[in-house]
Image (cartoon, rainbow, N blue to C red; front, side):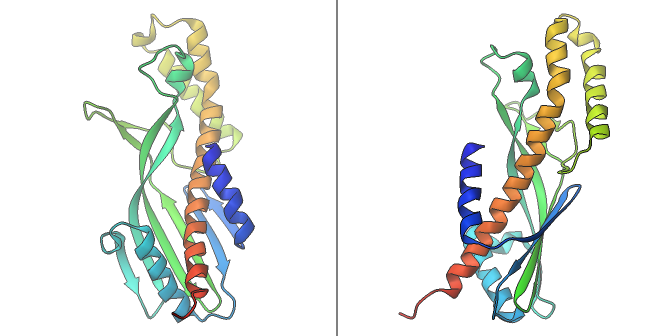
Length: 215
């Protein structure tokens, strides 16, 4: 997490960021590219995408040169704080974070002197070494309110009341329940940071392409 924040700080110092909007599992930003028309911006965005993705042809699901619209579908690994590790800190088989896979859709639209990029997350999933799949117990939102956090804590209480937790101490159960807001807040911040870092990497490559010298 510290490494991600460091890179974000670096990018914020070298790129302009405009009108970030968050709505549930959607995050979008508008970037300014002064003096460049929509056609040129769209070309530079395609170049940036080709550099960032290992197989851009595979992830680009829709491309319209006329409307300057690009739709990408790919997968992100997002580290999520493991509440079970917080409940059992001495259990060496548990890790502090679990990487949950999130399919996402990226929508990029170019206009004269600016473009908008939007990332839409799907809910996270995790597969263990036996290929058993688990769903993240909360949705991939980035704007949870207090009422929603209380609902998540209530679900955690219901979980701890299940029979297979009969041998778990009351203290451990309480740690698990009370850790839910911390886990969710860190999770939603990680989603924001992941998107912002990704958006900034695209913007940086667009600017670098504009500054290329003749050779």
